[in-house]
Image (cartoon, rainbow, N blue to C red; front, side, top):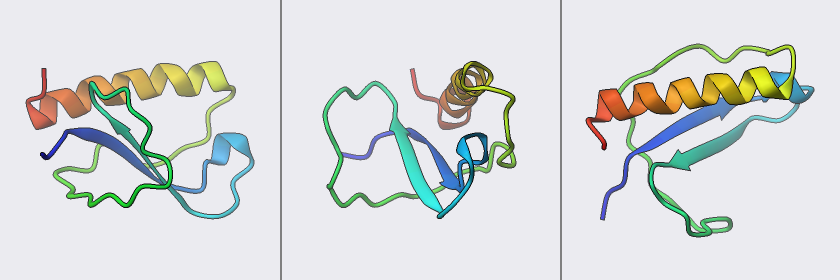
Length: 76
């Protein structure tokens, strides 16, 4: 069944950039999806990718992004 997610597509500038990656945080899911093929459908762009001063600042923004994704996707 479809699941809501917050997704980043980019170069991870906080950690030195590099190749483009796709990272999906599936809301309220605790299983292991590494190596699995997923289909993503996008609803709304939340923000531009940016470089944060440290990992803690990035984690704080990811938490805000997840909250915004829940609002946009009307997920619990």
